[in-house]
Length: 483
Image 1 (cartoon, rainbow, N blue to C red):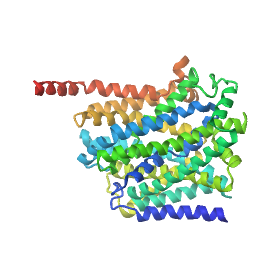
Image 2: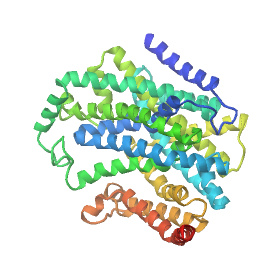
Image 3: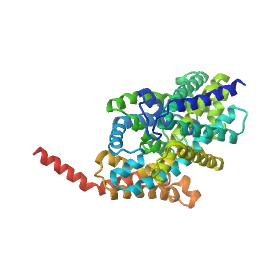
Image 4: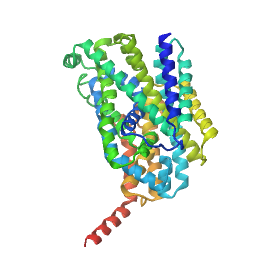
């Protein structure tokens, strides 16, 4: 009964926070403090896909997975707030855009672009949200005496209610609350794990003494050679650079008031994400010493570790952290999906009942997909993020670097080129997926080359070549001014 009351109070608290902190415009935030923005960014960034899926992968790959956490801190957080966040806010304010897709569309003078980007993002983020909901449902059904499907639909309803009532400002405040819970949960798991293995030095020595496997051919404390190492590096790039253009994270920058505020957010966000992701990945890496070599499927590693090491109160806290990670990301996803579908695709100003119905439909679509999906949640994450990054990252960076001189043709060519190459490489080149689709793959080590490394360079090359005249013209203008 105590457990049920705790979770009921948690759900009520989220809805109340969303309701009380809502803004007038459901697509734009009001005044939000630095700490709230930092925790909201981390909570949006990190989901159960990371804390259950990727932390479970640490069981198979060892401490080399901590490279992913380092990438999330420096590339996915510090670099973003140092170089991307404030320029994004300036362009959003200048173009009066309420969504990232509309910002790019207004900059290039192409109304069709917002429909294309809004539709593409909505579809792919619904898929990603289904993975987030599934990860949360797995954890909740292991905590409460309910089925996985019942847990799934309870979470879908809770997210739909908080997003439809709170808008973006409400989402930011609920995410900040959830981010704080995630920090506490990660600390609790890391502490009991280090205690169980005798401390970090003893744990590292014990992992180093384990024999290498075909996957981890340099042992559990070093980067693997060949395909294994390439897999880890691809996770670093997809989860640390691919996030630069994820619409639900780009929209977080719309709340900034100054470049100084952006610089102040960075250290808080880096600390929080280092604790949440780095701490959980460390615990996942050491889990092989506690659970043994045959612990089961990677999606079950972290729940098994939690149940074995943490007392009842600690297990409840970490379960709250996992659910918080999922619901915070799911809230951001449902908000941007509803905004993209209604504001960008349908070109409607969603308010009141229309906004609530749109959010509910998007949440139900994610829930239905989650009940049908049988792939592991980490693969869904990287696939969705890669395709979105392939279509949006180059145009987005082009806008920040070149400005509205970037041109409609360059944006369309780079976006479609990146999207087509990513899908083609998933289908015919990248061995983990292409063997199940077209039963073929690129030869040798090329078959392990992630689509991110094919699509992003290609889309960047396209936009660089097509905007070269703009670069040369700007350079000549600066030379003439100086002379």
